[in-house]
Image 1 (spheres, rainbow, N blue to C red):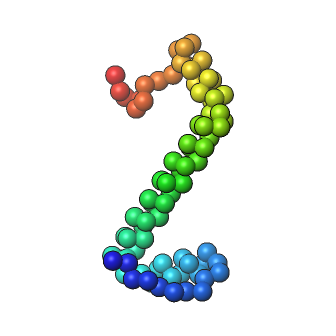
Image 2: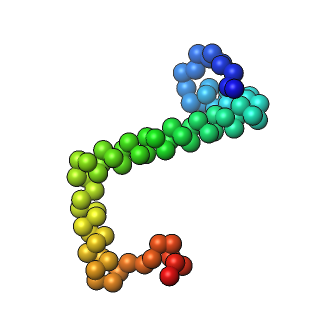
Length: 79
């Protein structure tokens, strides 16, 4: 369980300094939390971009490139 720390932090430097003081187990929990948060924000932004049509031009360009043979399998070594 993550111990709650109360800091009056007003800068990224203060947050970074506080992170440096965390025990290894709590640092790993923080890392997991931040990774999950990053992934959630990425998914949310992607969903917003997709539903708003912002990705339509990029998708059309990618399909056009593929149709003329300018694409490679992903991953590159896949058959």
